[in-house]
Length: 177
Image (cartoon, rainbow, N blue to C red; front, side, top):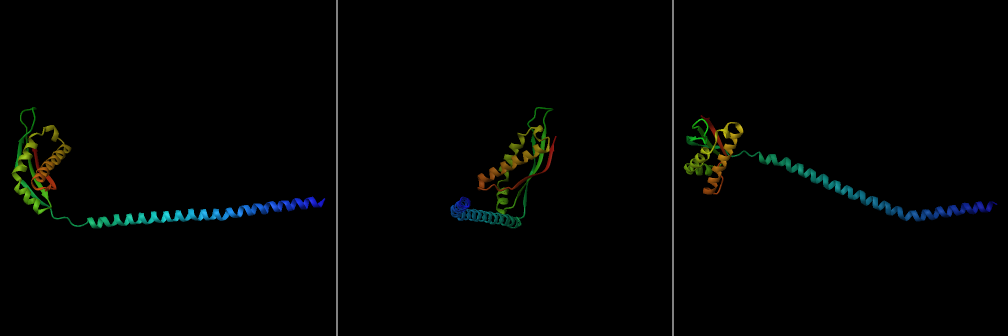
């Protein structure tokens, strides 16, 4: 009776040897696939790291490049102060008196502003006379009028010279009555 046990044991050994033969070809393939996945991941991670570090380097270099000192500001006052009737039907006539300064950093633009000062005054007078008192009652309204005034000046200068010319328009005095 010992023969069948030995035959059964030999059968099991043969079956496990067959399994090992069948498993061995898969394992190098699996190892190769894992190595390929790891290599691709490392390459992708390296590319991401270097791209990210070069972005940080380029953004760090920008402030140094933009720290160049701008040309000095030059101002031109539109004299005399503007005095206009405000567009209002409440409580009789209302007035606005405003002093305007134009700022530029370009000497050529400053000369253009001086040359076209009469046209600039005319455009601003028309703009100021269209204002209603409630539109300039608060700071936001005054800032809106200031922005609209700058846009008018830049539009005129662009039509005359091809460049906006004025960088800022400042109200140095603002009186309503």
